[in-house]
Length: 184
Image (cartoon, rainbow, N blue to C red; front, side):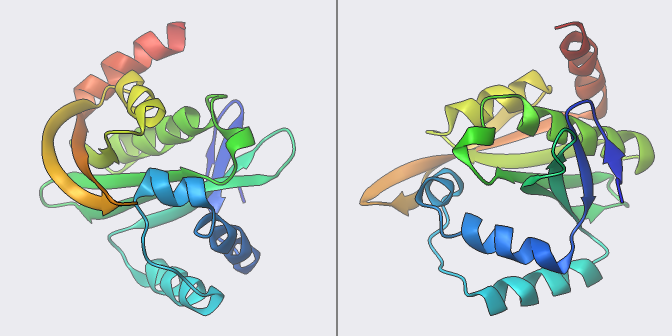
């Protein structure tokens, strides 16, 4: 089932067979570094987490799939959805280096942001990114995200402290960036 359709990728709900992809992702050294993940997960813990996510009405977890191959290449989540204050947060992960740098993540984020702003009526969507993840930061800026703050030295990873950059995009900023992005 294709929930949100893009030119190169589509987003669909999780299936039980997707847990293996998530398990492999959270074992990958580079993904762990980019996301600041320090906890180790078993397959059982992954299954339990995603089963509880499915019951949580304040989040939407989706798999990123390439149109061309129907291969699951990552996942994203719209989380902490607050309909009263019309805001949420988002996170994304592409599961293999070969899928990064081709615009798949940016397109997937564009799809979920369009859904959040247009269909859910959200006003602001935020995220965090570690200062060393410059490729992700550029992708977010392309979609209209602006740096809103820095939590200095929040992450202690591999013997060093790293800054956590807080970013957010308002609906009108996204639509303005989306027009520019569509022209590229």
